[in-house]
Length: 118
Image 1 (cartoon, rainbow, N blue to C red):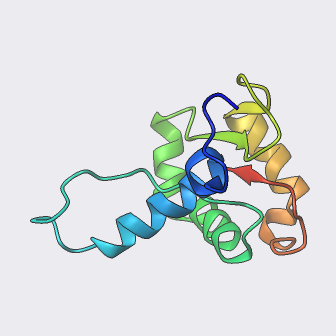
Image 2 (tube, rainbow, N blue to C red; image 1 turned 45 degrees about the vertical axis):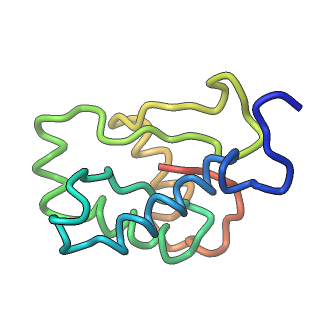
């Protein structure tokens, strides 16, 4: 199959990429002499802890301030099973309301198994 490495899903699936990037960024947290690039935080919403962190971010004062100047704060993507930009949404105010309703503003984290990446 073109563009795929059999048995290496972290390399070819979006949620695998997010997991690897987050682990890599965490490993070099507080070590700017080792790692200068600041990865934007990404969240796998089918991972209970990351889902809760995402909704905590949405409730934060810093996020509300950011929202005032940035109308698009995230991109939401189906983690696997969607190709060629299908399942890709801009996380604008309307999408935020939809996602908050679907996840009960974070109350359903750990109960929804859809592969969604923010």
